Length: 167
Length: 255
Image 1 (tube, rainbow over the protein chains, first blue to last red):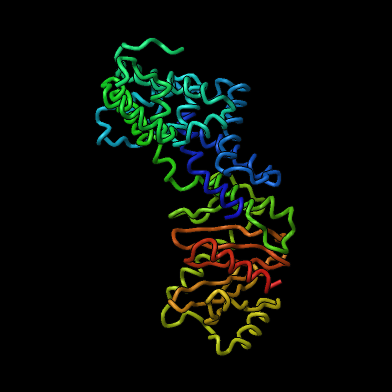
Image 2: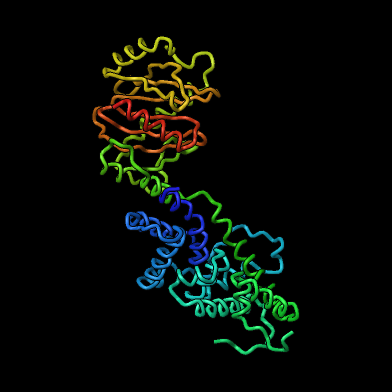
């Protein structure tokens, strides 16, 4: 597979990630579009180190951070006005209200949301996700812990209070 | 088994992500088995993952939005001869409306908007004659020389019927078609399964040379371009990559 094919192959998961990260479809596809354009314009610099997908994710994460820095409100959408993203299948997730999960994800701090989605949605290993986010694995783990606990709490599924807080 | 120490979330997260070594994994498994809270937490995380997959998984299965598609196509390796700057600038993804004919879908990035006319005409000719059983062509391939001379004379230009044998398509013949300023030529080809494709050529003196542009209408797709005073379109019910190869072959032979 040549580089361009690999770039193309990475796009569906970039879109999935961006849609979860941004929550509004236009903002998400703008982010992927910007990422693609940046990757294409830099592809002659790509030295073939590591998977193309990771490189693309790194670009996307940088752009996401930059975008928030430059225009922190650009893609904020009132949670209540969000469209129900996909038609929600009420099957085995019946015990988990997807709408609630969507809202709870949106309310996570950005760094936790970025971390959680890399691992929980994209299935990356802790090492991969930590490398992409440029943080030590220990930091990633505590972010994941906080994100998962917040998600659990915000979806009304509070954990048993037997442990002391971690952070 | 090691007493009442609760399992730390850090360990559970490593466990859940499946990145522990086998020994550590097995040791923790045993402790988790004896710890209902830990089991509940892991089950909860599984549900979180499933919820995320249900919410956002479908996005990854959607076809790419047109703008992304067009950006990727514009970056594809260019045909050998068209001017590089035009190629970089002009690669538009077109879609056809069910009723209204051609229109630009999404952001029209190409400077070659006037090319709609040829795309429209070529597609209509394709659809009309490809379905024809008794008279798909006016002059059959066994009179190829005559066909080419005749069409060249009527178009006022030297026209050739490119050879697509390497792609498995053989010339069936061709016909003359009306065009806005000059007649147009249509060549038809067929492969060994009966699939047909057409090459449409129309003299258009004013048109600038351009890169390949993609057009599609349902299963029917094609590429069109302008070169040296002629507009061309290659259209078929083939996948995009094959059509591109065929269009490139036409480009190389027609220049």
